[in-house]
Image (cartoon, rainbow, N blue to C red):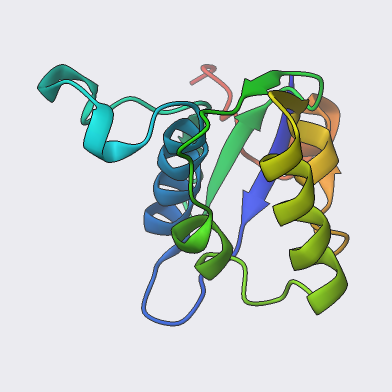
Length: 130
């Protein structure tokens, strides 16, 4: 497992932004207007929560995301205001010219992917010992 700690941005808290990112990744596979009612809560990655209020996506950078021909990226891109114009263009080209792509190919350059050892040391998995 790998982890991406999601920072708050604008009016979105860390947990809100993490949940929205995971949801929008799902919407690349199946746009909202094509989803069944039971898909309304579907996401690509899980989210874990730290006692201090931060949230992190539990990711697999090799996970293949299928691209629906009617997928749009506006909402996903809005969740990453730190993207450079070049990164935004690369993301759009990758999604619009591919039938699928590995998640790791769209992780912004400003994002650090963490391993379990880092997360344990940072207190994400509290000890069950009393």
